[in-house]
Image (cartoon, rainbow, N blue to C red; front, side, top):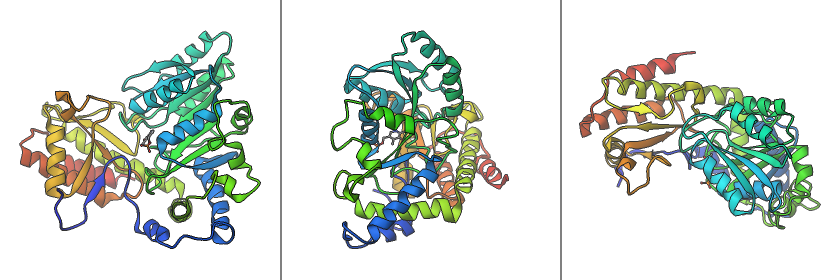
Length: 399
Ligand SMILES: *Cc1c(COP(=O)(O)O)cnc(C)c1O
């Protein structure tokens, strides 16, 4: 049980902290869904969603979590027996590829483990596909399990250089509203998002963006069933078709508020640089704890391959598990479990943790997490290097 006084802080990589502004926007009676305000805010939401993703093309909203978003995308991308190239850099990359396989798609999996995907190896896989059977390359932008960030623009450039016609589908569930992301500039055909990570909402909305090319191809995708078909959602004859039925009413009010906060009040560039600065503070602290051969360390050695919304780290000999327990019980801070590093029954499971720093996060929240982690390391007697909080404070002060 967390302490009963003061605000607790759920610092896991989703669901993330919901701003009071968003909670207040959602806290209202159900609106008429046939006419009035809900219709006009929905139109504004689609305009905002396209700005958020950096696209002139098509956006759709599904009532689902991220896994539902994966499936919504896949049903509109493939027919039974089609081929895909799956690119895995953590548990979520593998998960999306597996979902495709279970739906009848033949997936060649390129597994990069805990490193960022090598665009050259993706190009080689496409070159080896002489009959041009691969319809899509599936990539995760930021894999929330490993905290690897892939260079989507470089992957697209490498794909283009092969002349292979495969389209590019990107899971940006953990990076939307956190890391720089430009759908059209980077040549992304299908983009998948969800409401409960950088978008600061409760789980419940899966967001899809399709390029003209991908939407054209979707007309022939025979995996799509009526609810999941994207075409009527982006070109509805009646309002209800945007959602295949009743709209997610309160979520829409919340999403409208989020888009105002991100696009108008703070600005997308400022949102991206805030996440970058906060991430650097967390990395600096963990690097400092890792001195003195404590074994504490970041999952991803290369800074350019780290996402700015989540940080996976190791504290050996079960230290990560001990620290997580101390933080939750004594400090009211909940950190994320290690995901995809070891199974819960394996001893190494307690060696990993993740810090979520996505969405409604600022410097004092990050320093609060790091400061209580430092207290927890002391209290549990875990050996560590010194100067972590000074290093984080310095990183926060950098321009
Ligand atoms: C969270 C997440 C998912 C899964 O989303 P759910 O809402 O838990 O189904 C998929 N991919 C990435 C990159 C994620 O961060």
